[in-house]
Length: 144
Image (cartoon, rainbow, N blue to C red):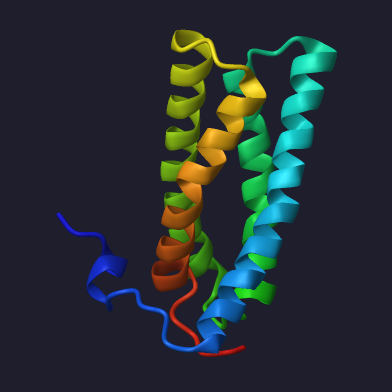
């Protein structure tokens, strides 16, 4: 089974506009990631939450922020929110599962500190999220 966005076109860097778009994606992602990490730290340190659970709570909150900022700033999408958010939620759901799996594996089984594990999870999800959201959620755009 192929994903709908996988057949639209192969991802390549076309020009400077693609690099600018990726830079905006990284900036938006940094804001959303900061939100996730703050929630993770707060829940673990203040309430002794399990790191994986706290990370997932932060991921969900940051995903909502990420959608709003990517829709308007990164991809400047004109798609209807119902259509765009449905695709975004599916991609974020995969990201949430990857995040939970990586966090659980690294913190519970490999005994890596939860912040180092979160960095590994974040990096692992970054490229998948950009390509999937660029091609499926928000459509391909040439807006700088």
